[in-house]
Picture 1 (tube, rainbow, N blue to C red):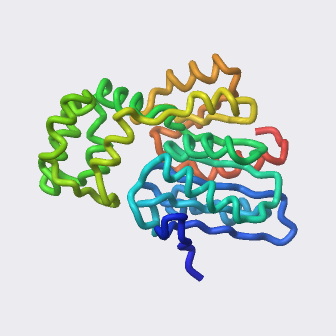
Picture 2 (picture 1 turned 30 degrees about the vertical axis):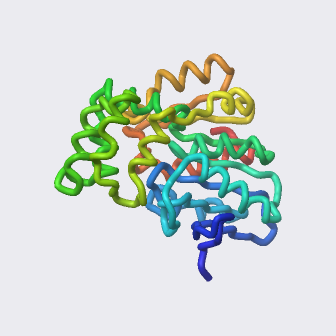
Amino acid sequence: MSNLHQAQDGTLVDFQHIKRQNSQGTFFLWPCGMGDIRSHLYQNYCDILKKFDLILYNPRSHGESQGNYCFHQAVQDARYFMQHLKIHPPLYGVGHSAGGAGILRLANSFSFQKLFLFSPILNSRQALEFMYREQTQYLFTKLFCRERSYNPKLWDVLMDGQWLDYDHWNGIKDSIEDKAPFLNSIKKSMEEIAHPGYGVYDEIVKHGSKSLICIPEKDLWFSIENQLQVAKKNNITIATVYNAKNHFFKRRWNNIWKFITYAVNGENV
């Protein structure tokens, strides 16, 4: 049975609802930007979360989904599909990176018991500014361009950073070939994340009491200091996943899923 379902505009989106017998609740899982909810980062969830219903969501351009990724459209699609489900409560959200932002925005429309946010991108433009300051922009440049020969002009623009200036961007965007891996329009995606960008600071304040932010020991994609300040200001629980050395919590996801189920069950973690 296909996991592709039609969104309101007819675009096929990868969205799966797995039902369990004697379910103890439902987990909604949202991956990182350009990630896949069925990838190695999440491969252990089916066994560890076998007592829970699962909602597996790959936004447009992710997994098998068609279309072009847009944060606001991704939230709208998720909301549309969720409205047609019979959800077994309590509902828990797990979001990684941009998926953390998506879960927070989705919580405006649905009653989540708990939100587990892993290195959430709280503001997309601030994430870009952080990476240029830390000179780690090569990470998203490779994500969007693979190598310079794939799209030389796009590579040079992304590596340079001047495109964050709105007037500069308007002056050069027509000269960029509009192609990138996974995306139908890299220009539209660049404009959304930078001009003006999207943020979920209002949501983290609104839903902070039921949120848990988890951060790695080191993150090259978003400022850990920013997340710590936001958590402290809003009395949000924040935890460091030790021995997680990067934004993607490499080799730590098995322990992460166990940690989540312990937290849900009220056990000591």
